[in-house]
Length: 207
Length: 224
Image (cartoon, rainbow over all chains, first blue to last red):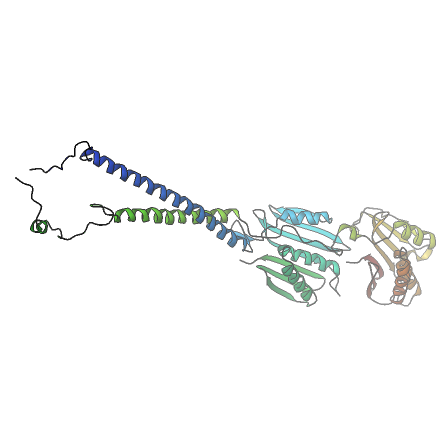
């Protein structure tokens, strides 16, 4: 025998049967919607926050690098062959593009040829050199020092300490009458001053 | 049949502890699945979206950022080689060729018969020789671009060492080259006269003088 709750006259009956199940479903649906909303908000905040964080960390690490990628090689960041060619042309050097991206600039003064050569990939310089042939046999003149000092400090022009280090190293070895090598910043320097009349400087990116 | 409340025996037979208190939150409803879902709704998107965010942020930064390099080239100083340093400072063709050689010393000056490559790569040249029988012994070569741009002056003297004429040629040439500088021309004159019998070099007023015994000559070029 089924027991039925007593009904008080004048009061509505308690929900039961299909109507009660519908209300339960309604509550469950609202709960789900809330969960989805919470998940979406958390997801969005996490995406933006982590995205900004990841961007900042990767950017910092990239800015801290001393070399830039150029094709399969490493190059000096920020310096293009056009910048060097333009600066030397303004001084009266004759510049010509020997191969795509590789330039040679020359100026002869009193029989001495001042020559600069830059090699580039994808618009950035990977390797460059400067030479003075023939200079004086008894001394390295001011013009040679100025030219090679300027060339050598190009990759570190934004860093006065490193630029001073390059010029100091060059001055020290001009008179040494020998071949000298050094790593300054992340760059390799090689100076051949075995003969004062024929001086060569080469600078390239350390791999 | 009257309704009978269930006995303990009935409850035990149904597997329910007789004194089990209703869980908090209302009878017949467990909160555990709701909480678990909430934790999942927070943790799962946090981890997944966080990873996606870090990776995509990193990739964007790596592909769009370049390492810091110089934005401009270093500045050049006054000694830097430049096209205007190819010329003897202040020297004019008129001073050397017209005044010193032609008027004062009666030299004969002519451009080369056939265009020939000059030592200094200058486009013009005047070859000057001494008058009379000295024409084969004393000569001066002047290489220049135009009237006010002289690159190279060279005096040759084929007399043997000891001949005063060579010392005179060398000293007066050094004086002519520095005639625009009253303070230094005397110094240049004296140096060339004193060193006329030796291989020697000096730099005076931006001009490099080189005296050689073989062949016997003096050269004036811009100093490097």
